[in-house]
Length: 159
Image (tube, rainbow, N blue to C red):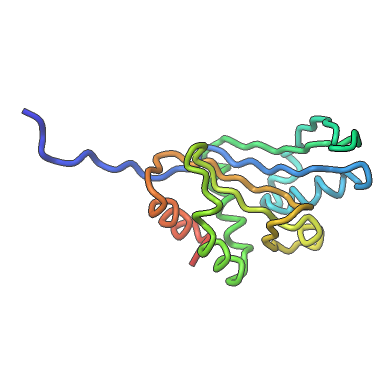
């Protein structure tokens, strides 16, 4: 006979964190890399080098796609908490209000776009236009938006 108990709900986990940015021909890619690494705790920055893929833009201009991908569970948790600790209350309110737009249930990823220019000044400013560094959190064990919001609250990304 089947048990009448509901199956235990598994805790939401981060499976991977990815930081990506485009470096256009008019930009200094070392500065773009620096802006990406400001999303990492200082002790991890020297250990994390981005992979680079070269693409062509709409008008054939060269674009470098820089990407740092981390899937070690202990490190991804540290990175998420570090980013959360650096967000001011205004940015956390933006994430709370827009969490449903930032979460892709198909890929189970939550994306925050930060201003490249602000990151160069060591500030985290959410910017949903061009010229950004994308910070993507891949999640496991998510079924509903409510669980995403609970996860964001538990990590300090929203209040």
